Image 1 (tube, helix red, strand yellow):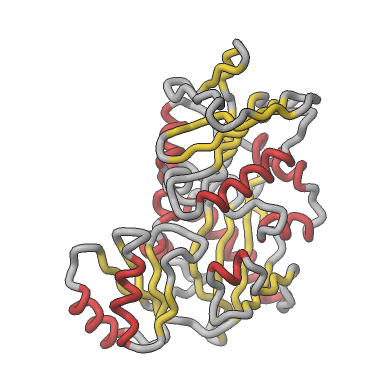
Image 2 (cartoon, rainbow, N blue to C red):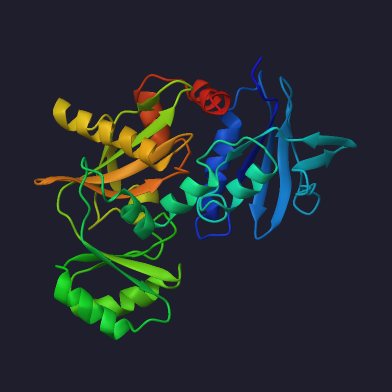
Length: 338
């Protein structure tokens, strides 16, 4: 018997990524050990937390139609189902974007002393903001960071564009500092495109980072804690059919995701070792994916994903399969290593 019984899988989110998060959450819930856990699927969006379905150990899954879903009691993180009050004793967070990836949901669970699958609120908050995360990790000697600049909504965009033109080389990538799935991201090749790209970035977030492009191979690697040690999964090389790894390339099949990545042993050790070190430096927990560009002059850090995609086609499940680990066993390890 494991340490936990009633597992709440929380998905959806308040961000543009909420539909992707639903697919991830449904996948995780379907792969949790049906002989070990009672699994409760919670759809959470804009403050409304509803029980979509549940499956008790060795039993059939029960679903609730929209409009008749039991509401989660947030005062103690419980739900009443058919006259029975269930208090969840573990939360598996699969929310891409706020509030499940930026530390807010983690803070709530920490106050209630409910264990959960992801990084704590402090690490989640730092990792979720691309600019803050780079600043936090910039002292690392194992990895390089592309030059960048930050602007917040309300500041002088024209003056900022002039600063970028004087200090960075094109092409540049304009990114909302918070969010994922490439929402609000633009590849900018000339100064005339910069201001509209910044305004587009502001539709996703109140702060926008402009980052100088780096030419090289795009690699991603995930690390996790198995209860004793931090370990890395096999690398994936992403070869996009588009100009860069945008939403279309990620979700509409316009990229090749090669696992294991065809790199040298030295390059593999560099990326896996760097991923484990950055995992430790940030104080991560659960499974965390990190993205890089391997350029001629070294390895460049792009970003951290503390709640990586978890559909059958997502990168981390591909890494797990390549490592020869059963996905159900992997999820059990993430839960029980708390």
